[in-house]
Each structure stands twice: as structure tokens, then as C-alpha cells.
Image (cartoon, rainbow over all chains, first blue to last red; front, top):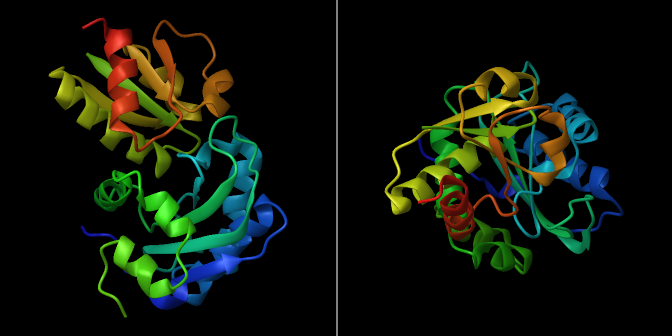
Length: 149
Length: 91
């Protein structure tokens, strides 16, 4: 299974946010815009970080926002939000965060393959800084190896 | 040999760490099963594991274990995984 599509409406460049919940909300909004999830999924992504901490900041500058599958996930979906000013999530090594990748999956089992694809994209250490500095959504699509809309 | 990767809900981040760990094990030529689990399941999953890989944020939720707990900072960095696994597994 390749990565879910990353349509232009699932990409937000240079969002202005004051704190990490606002950053996650921007990612949730992108998933809602692209039709992958409802806003209830946004609340669950935030709740997960409140419960378990900032471990979703899985690399320097990058947060992987996600929650369990649920009725609020309408289809497998991916979104990317870059921040105009980085925000702290409370991670001891990887703060501050300037790129949020949001993930919505319909089933726990079938997501493994496209998560592996995500690992392939970020295997290149230049990708996170390139995303953080992206000025167009088309360039973000290009970095994810997707056909540019 | 068994290695457990743990995240809050057992999908997403732990799946990424599993991919990176498997690539590091391949480089080290170590044959090991890598299982992803969540905070609730780590005790059962790690009962027969040599190593638990997780984030610094989640170490405290593991509790008592005989496995070596290794904190990973960059989940995409095969070099970091390779170096830390090499030390832990003594190869």
C-alpha cells in the first residue's frame, strides 16, 4: 500500500500558532478539509498527547499527529502543516517543532505498509528542514514523492 | 531474539520505529523479531524480550522489566538505532 494521497487541501504552509494544541488543531483541520476525518479526530489527537506526553515528536522538529482508528476517520489520510514560528511540545530532544505530519487510519492492521513508506520519505535527513522551509504546497507534495497537483 | 517497540497506542510512531529498527538489525546482521505494542500491552509483550525501544517520554510507563530499555530520540535515524542496538546486544 503506497502512502495515502496528499492533496493540496491537506497541506498548510506557514501556519501561525501559539502552542502545541493549536498546531495539532491545524493538522486536524487539514484532515477535515481533505475529507479524511471529522473534527472529533482532532480532539482525540490532542487527548492522546495529553495522556502520553510529547513522544509523538519522533525526530528533531517533527511531530507525527495521530490517534487510533475510529468512526471519526472517514478514509486513510495524510496531512502536512508547517509552522511560521516553531512551537515547543515538551520533548527533551526534538523540540521545537516546525513540521506536523498528521495521519488518520481506518484500520490498525493495514497502516503498516504506508507507515513504512513514511519512514522511506524521512530516511533522508534533509527532508524535515526542506519541509520546514517549504513555501508552496506543491513542493511539499514533491518531497513526499507524490504527483504534484 | 525479540525486540519490542512501544508507543502510546501501538500504531503510527511504533510502526515507524519498527521499520527503522528492522533496517538497523539488517545492517548488524542480527536475526530478531520486532513487535510493536502500546503502553497497555508492553508488560505482556516484553515478558520474553531482550530489548524495549521507546521514547524518553514513555520510559516511566514501562514499569519493572528484565529487558534493556533503550531510549530513541530520532525514530527515522537508522544510524542511531544501529549504534544503540549494537551496544545493547553486545555484537
